[in-house]
Length: 309
Length: 267
Image (cartoon, rainbow over all chains, first blue to last red; front, side, top):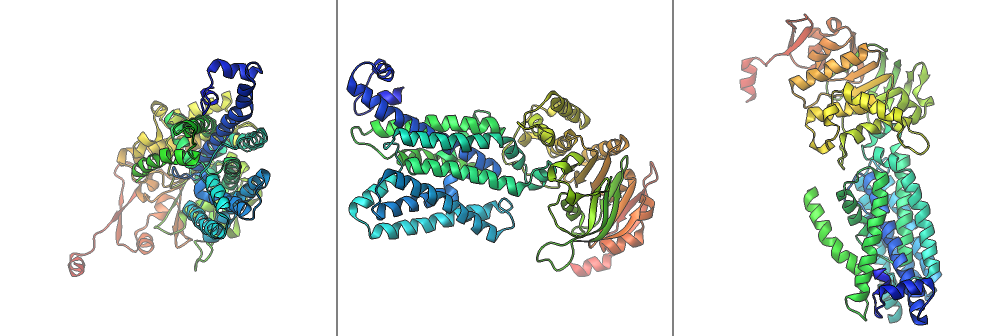
């Protein structure tokens, strides 16, 4: 409600409610229904998707520092989007699709690299993480090559996209993202008990009837799907997938079914708040959303790293 | 209950077989022990049972049916395994941890029924960890953690139980408590297979001992059959004498120090 009300043009809570109900000032109705509400919802969905994805990945990979972007999803999605920008395909749908395709492709590349290096997906968590980092580095190089020969306007557009933003929210986008998150997130919640078992290690998982390789891969792909959908909808919003599961665990949740749900809720709240800050801190100018979440996330990451070491 | 027949396990790229034609029966109501030096293939046998290592020849059967014909889910309702290593990255409450043993029995929605809660209560009390139920797994001592892991396996309510070195790092009292627990579980009708380095304890508790060396069965039988100085010396490559447990007369292994002259030349 606050997120919908605040902005370059400030609206009172009452006028927001009136606008939602379809009464009152026509401009207010337009701002609330077509700009602010879809934007807040998109932010919430992005946060929910990244939070759930991170919670599932950390459990299945038994690594508190795992997050969807570390696995190459973000790099691949950025390559897809930048290539679309560089080729001058500016249409919204094309960029979204290119980013989604790029993200999923990168995950498969990372999986293939990891499998070449180790026996199974999970037997070599480290290999998988390294593979993700390598795919990300390669993606960065590809982005620079693509941008070096691009128009200045294209470069600006691509850069803004890479910094992450919920500003281009449309109802269509909210619908698509909501649908993907409901499907993939729902599947993760369904298989959450399996993630509990996976987090005990492969031998124990096998003794409880869970094929660690197969179910690890399933969790991995669902988490990547969630992340790729959010990246396609709002660009790169860093560190949410890493930080949010830890906050949810701090709330005392350990079993993955409530943990994934809580991570989705915490993520949604966090990204909506960060987006509100992005819109209002330097108003009327906007700060990139991804930069704000990263500014918050990096110190948190360092604290976790110190604890883990 | 569990039968190993001519089992050969070979890891990809290895020059020799990790397990080289092992025959072994684990009947119900008995405590069967698998002993042997480091790298003799004990853990590989456990891994092969869980289908985490390939059986290239021979077969492992459960009630006469080949393990390969079972799904992992079916297997997990017949045999519960406490593996040697397990690192819990994210601590959970002991009760929730033990409840994961019910995973093979959960229904479509994977939610716990009254029967599941009952099985967890029973397992907690059998392994004598009821008082720990509310603690976090990262706040347990080594001995408590081993008992909690055994409770998790007991919650599976399987007719067979396999434990790989469950008393590593435990002091005398905790070690004895676990051996007594396993003995009474076997006497209550479970088929118990215990992988252990602790020859002296194994000799006092196990009904049947199989001693492995370089992937093969070096000797097997009762404690008196297996605990022979000449055999053990050649398997472990160290001078030993066999003494007697003063209470029940079970054979006990005493490894000797090397002769003084030899030690001095080494230093």
